Image 1 (cartoon, rainbow, N blue to C red):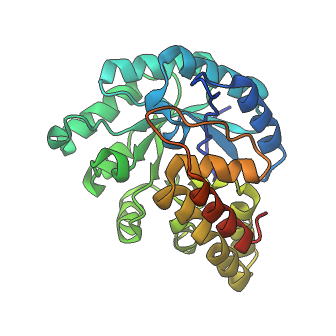
Image 2: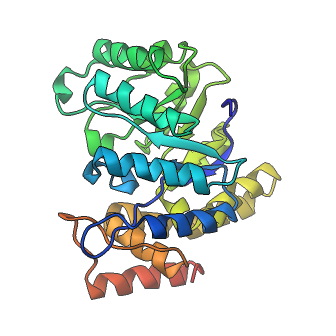
Length: 297
């Protein structure tokens, strides 16, 4: 599948774990079956919400394999392949390509964050793109990396024929506008959080990779549908209704909250992997109340 214009909602899929900490691949395949029937443009395996930093390479490759095998054939499959070093990122990206991923979402390196200036990031993404067998997308997620790629670097990188887009999870709408002003029209600039989804649509963004799409995929998609059909008030209302749920499953309760919301919504959340902690009973009740108030359960 050649990637052209990406349009619609993509979940950065959760990784269900068993109570003993093993990956529950059966649960993941079951979730894939359910997402196949939801109004989604594709799926991202090995995103931040996938607890990717806790997975070893064998687990990562098996998650990609199952995703490719279980996904609907018209679905775009992206794999998060960013590692700290250039050479390891290229290796994992090409392994993902051999397993059938259509594109790779590549995280900004962050461990030596103070040295990740424009020059370093431009060289990194250029070298990865020039040596990857599939197109790559830049992944800017300042919440976790504390590295924020500049509009200047994005402008340079967007001219590389194998860098076809970017997921900006900063939630910074003014910065999103700045990114939009420097990239070519066919560059897939996507939002990475449902909190920015409606504002992004009004700016002309056409795709989002958002945690909330794990448990509320059709609700996320409806915001775009209403907006594109000219039903602006309905779009805004749908966005406003899911906004508190997004806050709960990202900022407030994190991945444990997201997984519990998935379980409440008919998906298999499974356990989180240590050292992450499961939700306490009072937290579960709060998540349940938030979903109930939004009319999602």
